[in-house]
Image 1 (cartoon, rainbow, N blue to C red):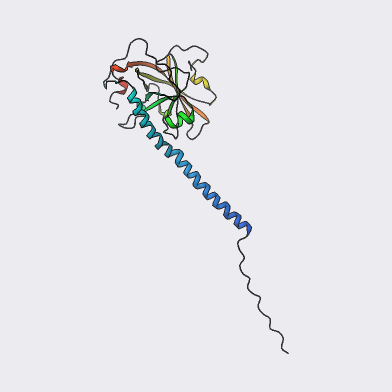
Image 2 (image 1 turned 90 degrees about the vertical axis):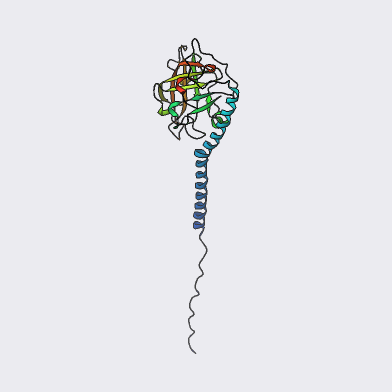
Length: 251
């Protein structure tokens, strides 16, 4: 009897992916999805919010123009006596416009509306520059304090670090044009609320002059600190007389 012939071992079928490799695959897919979502968020935060803010600003500016009395497009001399001061408006009311010649983009002047309040969800994000309630109104002795984003949502105060002493900050209202001049700038922690005090140079003393303060986050893409610019009222022009020389030729 012949010896039995040994049969070759059957080839093993390749087994499916291991549990570890499946986990790695799932984690990889989740990371890719997370990266896509993060990228979309960055696009929304840094680009789309600016697009929306630009559209809203056009609407706000047009509406403000409808409520403001006419003002001749000619240079007028400064007013005499005390500047007119309006009552503080209700929260959410757009009542003024800020012009900053230093921030003009070629032939396009920088002009942004000012709304009462500094709540981020209802004012700063959707409407732009906000006025700190309880601080002075334009032209009033005390501190006319404003807040605005430096990044995203139209970033009205993006170039705040480019302002220099002597630069004009012109505030337009239904009564007059108020010309402030930049005096100083500083970087402070968010807890330093003295920068919007009636007399920011000496918070313990009563104010004796009309000042303006711009506040925004610092550095870019961070809320760690605040960049603050202070200015002092130099002159004012009655609205029905024309415009200040600082805005000559600005549309």
